[in-house]
Picture 1 (cartoon, rainbow, N blue to C red):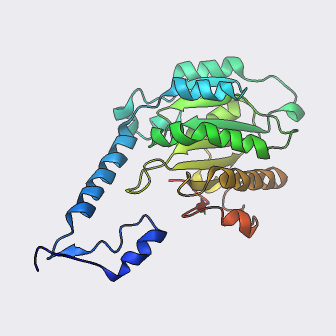
Picture 2 (cartoon, rainbow, N blue to C red):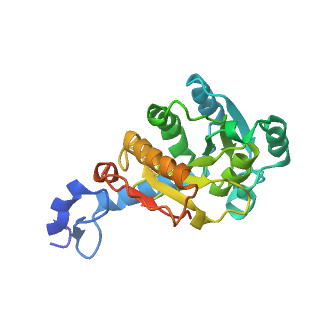
Picture 3 (cartoon, rainbow, N blue to C red):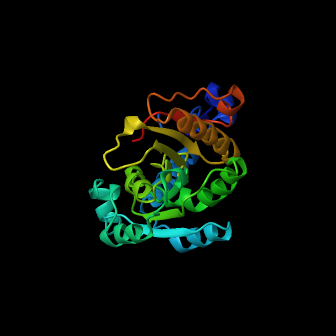
Length: 267
């Protein structure tokens, strides 16, 4: 009997979730197949963190949508520095800051961009490569025609707060940072959307809203775009984001996918 796999009565629930439940046992140990699957998932999560972003491919795909692109870099020179110094991932390097300064719009306040989109590798470049461009295309289907878009910024070695100096330099009322989230053992390609009204350096997480787990197996892209658009419209109407802006969208939007989540603050 010690070599026989004993089924777990909860195994029937596995059809509803990718969580590791109902795996059974072999003696006092985990069966070989679930053990190997765990090791694979762990390796995929580690790879997602260290994998470099194919920024040229992402930028080319964004341009193919007919949108101008700014190629930027954080003050973290490489991946090791990015992981060891989170503060450097929150600000731009000198070359990027100079590029933004030279491109900063000189326009009356009434003609400033309504929205700046920032595509950041974060902790999962895989999430950005798989979902960012398709999400931008889905968002444009929801975006009212009168909304003015700033150039899309693609930023390497970036954290959420990198959107604040970018949004300020571009004169945008709102900034949305599309960023690869910290990989889980069942979600190495999860993307987060962080929304900030009146972006500027010094904004804190309590002043942002977040739509999390954007991916086909979590919150599908079209549903995420619809929920984000609701938040953007409310943010512009109330001129705020963060803990003061609750997700009061329709139940149909809130139930857009499996394992979806709307959070008020970022990691």
